[in-house]
Image 1 (cartoon, rainbow, N blue to C red):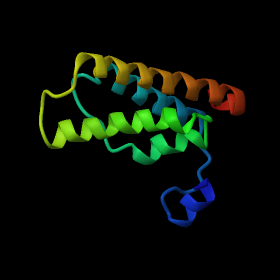
Image 2: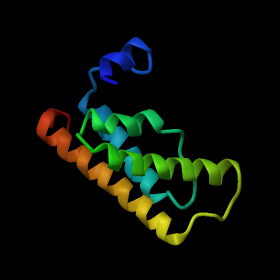
Image 3: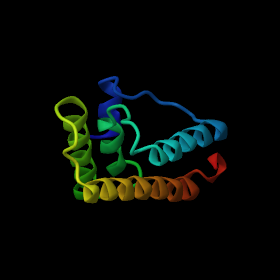
Image 4: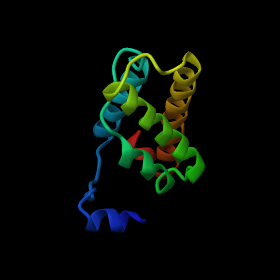
Length: 114
């Protein structure tokens, strides 16, 4: 599936972000990573899927993030206390990798937004 397909389905709309907008979104990412042990974030399924189309992550790496999203959903909605410390550390590490890779991608493709 491509971005054009996503636009046709109205899952996304074209948008020209400002430098301030990108900075605000990156601040949210940092806050969410810092507070990751305290609360859960919204459903990021499409945002995670988009990583193959934007920053070029492999489908396998994206699927790992999707697996963590599903774990989070099960924990949040079905039962508590079922995520190991190892899983938490791996999830946090992947979140940091996403942030770093997005920053590198922005710096390469859209440096004016940073």
